[in-house]
Image 1: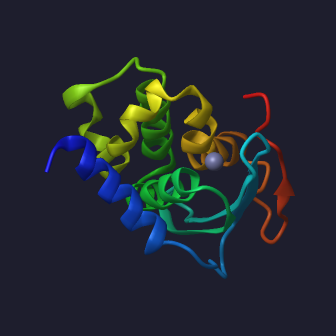
Image 2: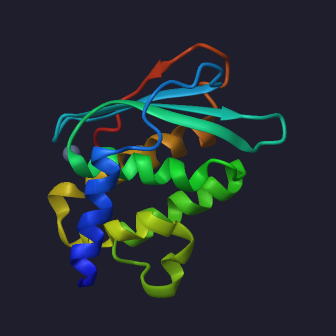
Length: 158
Ligand SMILES: [Zn+2]
Protein backbone atom coordinates (compact mmCIF):
# COMPACT_ATOMS: atom_id res chain seq x y z
CA UNK A 1 0.00 0.00 0.00
CA UNK A 2 1.45 3.35 -0.90
CA UNK A 3 1.45 6.24 1.52
CA UNK A 4 -1.39 8.05 -0.17
CA UNK A 5 -3.64 5.00 0.04
CA UNK A 6 -2.69 4.54 3.69
CA UNK A 7 -3.57 8.16 4.45
CA UNK A 8 -6.88 7.72 2.67
CA UNK A 9 -7.62 4.66 4.75
CA UNK A 10 -6.85 6.47 8.02
CA UNK A 11 -9.18 9.28 6.96
CA UNK A 12 -11.97 6.88 6.03
CA UNK A 13 -11.63 4.99 9.28
CA UNK A 14 -11.93 8.15 11.41
CA UNK A 15 -14.84 9.36 9.34
CA UNK A 16 -16.81 6.12 9.44
CA UNK A 17 -15.89 5.00 12.96
CA UNK A 18 -15.00 8.09 14.95
CA UNK A 19 -13.58 7.43 18.42
CA UNK A 20 -14.62 10.73 19.91
CA UNK A 21 -18.05 11.60 18.59
CA UNK A 22 -20.57 12.24 21.36
CA UNK A 23 -21.08 14.30 24.47
CA UNK A 24 -18.80 15.18 27.34
CA UNK A 25 -21.26 15.78 30.14
CA UNK A 26 -18.81 17.63 32.37
CA UNK A 27 -17.03 19.59 29.63
CA UNK A 28 -15.85 22.99 30.79
CA UNK A 29 -14.82 24.20 27.35
CA UNK A 30 -17.50 24.14 24.68
CA UNK A 31 -17.14 25.94 21.39
CA UNK A 32 -18.77 25.71 18.01
CA UNK A 33 -16.70 26.02 14.86
CA UNK A 34 -18.22 26.64 11.47
CA UNK A 35 -16.74 26.50 7.99
CA UNK A 36 -19.44 28.02 5.78
CA UNK A 37 -17.49 27.47 2.58
CA UNK A 38 -18.06 23.73 2.95
CA UNK A 39 -20.94 23.47 5.42
CA UNK A 40 -18.84 21.95 8.19
CA UNK A 41 -20.35 22.68 11.58
CA UNK A 42 -18.87 21.15 14.71
CA UNK A 43 -19.13 21.65 18.44
CA UNK A 44 -16.05 20.77 20.40
CA UNK A 45 -16.32 19.77 24.06
CA UNK A 46 -13.24 19.56 26.25
CA UNK A 47 -12.80 18.79 29.91
CA UNK A 48 -9.73 20.50 31.30
CA UNK A 49 -8.78 19.83 34.92
CA UNK A 50 -7.35 22.26 37.47
CA UNK A 51 -3.81 21.38 36.41
CA UNK A 52 -4.51 22.34 32.81
CA UNK A 53 -4.63 18.76 31.56
CA UNK A 54 -7.22 17.85 28.94
CA UNK A 55 -8.83 14.84 30.58
CA UNK A 56 -11.62 14.28 28.07
CA UNK A 57 -13.05 15.51 24.83
CA UNK A 58 -15.71 14.88 22.24
CA UNK A 59 -17.22 16.51 19.20
CA UNK A 60 -20.68 16.75 17.70
CA UNK A 61 -21.95 18.14 14.45
CA UNK A 62 -21.67 17.37 10.80
CA UNK A 63 -19.57 18.11 7.77
CA UNK A 64 -17.38 16.61 5.11
CA UNK A 65 -15.16 13.59 5.70
CA UNK A 66 -12.01 15.68 6.07
CA UNK A 67 -13.46 17.97 8.74
CA UNK A 68 -14.94 15.12 10.76
CA UNK A 69 -11.91 12.84 10.50
CA UNK A 70 -9.56 15.69 11.34
CA UNK A 71 -11.32 16.64 14.58
CA UNK A 72 -11.53 12.96 15.56
CA UNK A 73 -7.78 12.49 15.01
CA UNK A 74 -7.11 15.68 16.94
CA UNK A 75 -9.05 14.46 19.98
CA UNK A 76 -7.24 11.11 19.87
CA UNK A 77 -4.05 13.09 20.06
CA UNK A 78 -4.76 15.85 22.61
CA UNK A 79 -6.75 14.04 25.30
CA UNK A 80 -4.36 13.34 28.17
CA UNK A 81 -2.08 16.23 27.24
CA UNK A 82 -1.68 19.68 28.73
CA UNK A 83 -3.31 22.76 27.24
CA UNK A 84 0.13 24.06 26.29
CA UNK A 85 1.03 20.85 24.49
CA UNK A 86 -2.33 20.83 22.68
CA UNK A 87 -1.68 24.40 21.51
CA UNK A 88 1.80 23.45 20.35
CA UNK A 89 0.35 20.56 18.35
CA UNK A 90 -2.27 22.89 16.87
CA UNK A 91 0.48 25.23 15.64
CA UNK A 92 2.38 22.29 14.24
CA UNK A 93 -0.73 21.08 12.43
CA UNK A 94 -1.31 24.57 10.95
CA UNK A 95 2.33 24.68 9.83
CA UNK A 96 1.95 21.31 8.17
CA UNK A 97 -1.20 22.43 6.34
CA UNK A 98 0.62 25.57 5.21
CA UNK A 99 3.43 23.36 3.91
CA UNK A 100 5.90 24.79 6.44
CA UNK A 101 6.49 21.57 8.40
CA UNK A 102 7.09 18.09 7.09
CA UNK A 103 8.88 14.80 7.66
CA UNK A 104 10.03 13.86 11.15
CA UNK A 105 8.78 17.16 12.52
CA UNK A 106 5.24 15.83 12.13
CA UNK A 107 5.78 12.76 14.28
CA UNK A 108 4.00 14.25 17.30
CA UNK A 109 0.85 14.77 15.25
CA UNK A 110 0.45 11.01 15.06
CA UNK A 111 -2.39 10.12 12.67
CA UNK A 112 -3.24 13.76 12.04
CA UNK A 113 -0.04 13.84 9.97
CA UNK A 114 -1.96 11.80 7.41
CA UNK A 115 -3.71 15.03 6.38
CA UNK A 116 -0.47 16.60 5.18
CA UNK A 117 -1.41 16.35 1.51
CA UNK A 118 -4.27 18.78 2.22
CA UNK A 119 -1.59 21.44 1.95
CA UNK A 120 -1.82 20.96 -1.81
CA UNK A 121 -5.63 21.25 -1.82
CA UNK A 122 -6.45 24.87 -0.88
CA UNK A 123 -10.21 24.33 -1.02
CA UNK A 124 -10.00 21.74 1.75
CA UNK A 125 -7.68 23.59 4.09
CA UNK A 126 -10.50 25.12 6.16
CA UNK A 127 -12.07 21.68 6.53
CA UNK A 128 -8.85 20.18 7.87
CA UNK A 129 -8.06 22.97 10.32
CA UNK A 130 -11.60 23.52 11.65
CA UNK A 131 -11.27 21.33 14.73
CA UNK A 132 -7.76 22.51 15.53
CA UNK A 133 -8.67 26.13 15.05
CA UNK A 134 -11.73 25.77 17.29
CA UNK A 135 -9.63 24.12 20.00
CA UNK A 136 -6.97 26.81 19.72
CA UNK A 137 -9.56 29.51 20.11
CA UNK A 138 -11.17 27.96 23.17
CA UNK A 139 -7.92 27.17 24.96
CA UNK A 140 -6.18 30.40 24.11
CA UNK A 141 -9.03 32.78 24.83
CA UNK A 142 -10.59 30.75 27.60
CA UNK A 143 -13.83 32.53 26.87
CA UNK A 144 -15.88 29.41 27.39
CA UNK A 145 -14.37 28.39 30.68
CA UNK A 146 -17.59 29.01 32.59
CA UNK A 147 -19.31 25.69 32.83
CA UNK A 148 -22.28 25.21 30.59
CA UNK A 149 -21.96 28.35 28.53
CA UNK A 150 -21.44 27.48 24.93
CA UNK A 151 -20.16 30.34 22.90
CA UNK A 152 -21.06 30.34 19.27
CA UNK A 153 -18.32 31.44 17.04
CA UNK A 154 -17.62 31.31 13.37
CA UNK A 155 -14.15 30.58 12.14
CA UNK A 156 -14.94 32.23 8.85
CA UNK A 157 -12.18 34.33 7.43
CA UNK A 158 -9.38 32.75 9.43
ZN1 LIG B 1 -15.40 20.42 4.67
